[in-house]
Length: 262
Ligand code: SF4
Ligand code: FES
Image 1 (cartoon, helix red, strand yellow):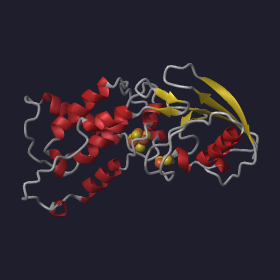
Image 2: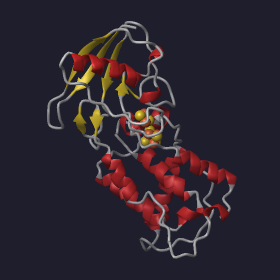
Image 3: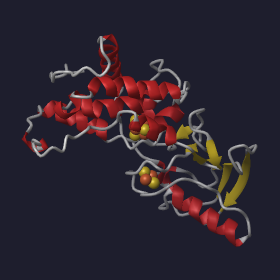
Image 4: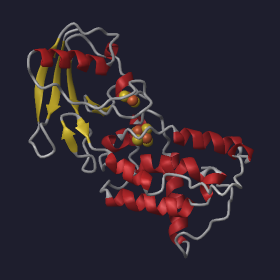
């Protein structure tokens, strides 16, 4: 395949960026999109040019590192795949392909196609965990019964890989789908109820502090999410947040109750 790539180049966070044209030839339809960029980078290096910076790690849809806005869509054409799972067979010989970084105030460009997604880490640190009392009287987690439907929904929420495509897809740059997945994976399980109030309040506070936009129910996040995280989780986050905000005392112990099915 012969292609023309129009790629965002930006030398650093403060530098002015621009789209630059790169012709590429000899691309196999069996290559992944990242392998195609590897071919281009090899060529650029051999010619003495600066290679294109882009994020990647596992290259198998697990880590969430790859993050390219391809032809106006996060992770490119196709549904429920990450950029590293996108193959060149989805394109035609002679295509012109536009490649940009995630665009969001909370994800500033570091270089070329790499953005700073540490805002997600700070949201996780604000409450996306379960504290474990290691006093020697632990109950084996597997000994706590969890209804199958709740376990399945919690597992589905836990498949969020933190890639940020939901933010890139949203015209408001909202992180609600990501935060709702991280809240839901614990909200549905007994182990997560002890800190449920603080978790919802603190993670939403941090999301706002990071300057993500508000959710206006457009739904682009769900469509572009490679892990098919459902909008149902946003409804659950809103219920969790409202319940916590209406309670009198932040941090008050919450007795376990089975959450209503969304
Ligand atoms: S909700 Fe989906 S799109 Fe958003 S960070 Fe998680 S996996 Fe990525
Ligand atoms: S490189 Fe890990 S999900 Fe794409």
